[in-house]
Length: 316
Image (cartoon, rainbow, N blue to C red; front, top):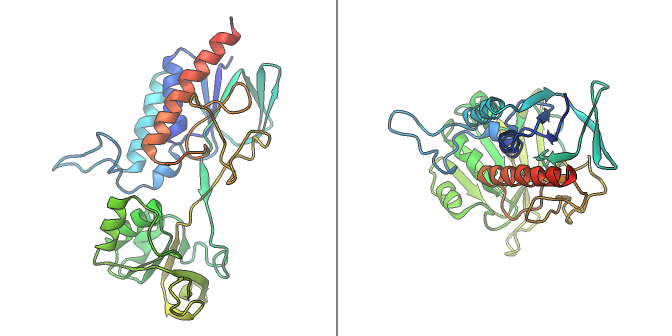
């Protein structure tokens, strides 16, 4: 089909962009390598999305349910979806050409990059070796395997606190370690984590190594604090699982020549336009002071609206 707008990535930003693009009467194609929803699929309860309050009979929607609704909504407005990988993205004249993993290509005058970000690893001994055997990056995926077990969580942002809360419903032995002396998470979420009786918070501490045989059996912890109390001291503790939430890495490799910040996130203007004409950015791959589902959705809507304006200008 003739395509007006290609959206790469089907997280909340890409799915919202698809809806707004299709409603603007554009022929929209969304390309997603995995399932629609992105990291939102991993959210246990989407409690902070406006309006998703639930009721006494029905709790707030999960990230999975929310993603399904976004997908169906975008399709209902006419957006098309393709499950495939994008190998390269090039602009020639006023057209972008995308090379796909199946050997085919797609072209369009405008592209929205909503590829998000992937989990950052701790890069410590044992992490890769025990991935899937006690080391995980998704509490809702793997948490139930460790019910009533001793679980370590590494991180200090929203994701770490949110996932620790979820794990605390499965076990009373959750230990959250963070290398700094305070959380980076939103205040309300941080306070809830600190006051959860099933979560032991240890600041100024990092996981230095993960050990075991067929599966995780222990962790080596190291003091990192600047309070002068045993900096560098290590100790080994028994562990059944390690869940890692150490931040994210933006998935921006498709556009190496686009302006980025020092961390690799793509810089845009208020219209979500990148330094490349016709290329718009939305969601976690974009340089932003606050990464939340509601922010990604808003950026997706703006990107689609401004992409439609850009296409109108090209068509005269």
